[in-house]
Length: 176
Image 1 (cartoon, rainbow, N blue to C red):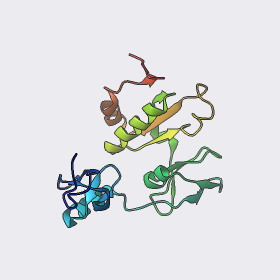
Image 2 (image 1 turned 90 degrees about the vertical axis):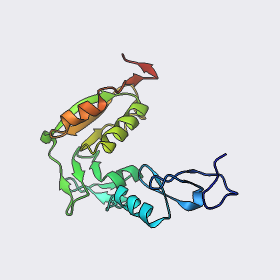
Image 3 (image 1 turned 135 degrees about the vertical axis):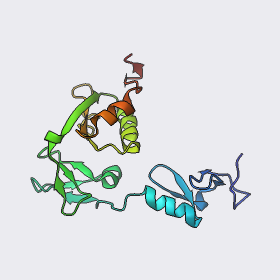
């Protein structure tokens, strides 16, 4: 059992991304992908990992004026797909910017929610500008319409390189 660097009687939750020491839940702050301890240098790394913005829980679509309730992930990522008018809006900019779909290319589609989660993680880690279409409907209408992944035309080659070894799966069975 790994123990906390500060509280030796407590079991460690994780390793701090900054200093590499093990800490318990009380001693760590959660970033987007990693944990960081309370050390000032590690807290600076945490600030760099977290986006400087966070969209509110509900927003108004700039195109059709529908009220949209956002998931935590959508609030952090900031690019929202309006299911009412099919618009893509970037809420990381002020005022929010309507994204031009002509500058995005579909690179793949999948019916597997696990694949989609991994693909999103890979693209976000690679700082690729993308959006997902149909993710929320996959659980409502499984097997009818796949989730489609679109990438900014300036990032298509980078996205393909990042995903070249990714093995798409359908129901846990490899497609290769």
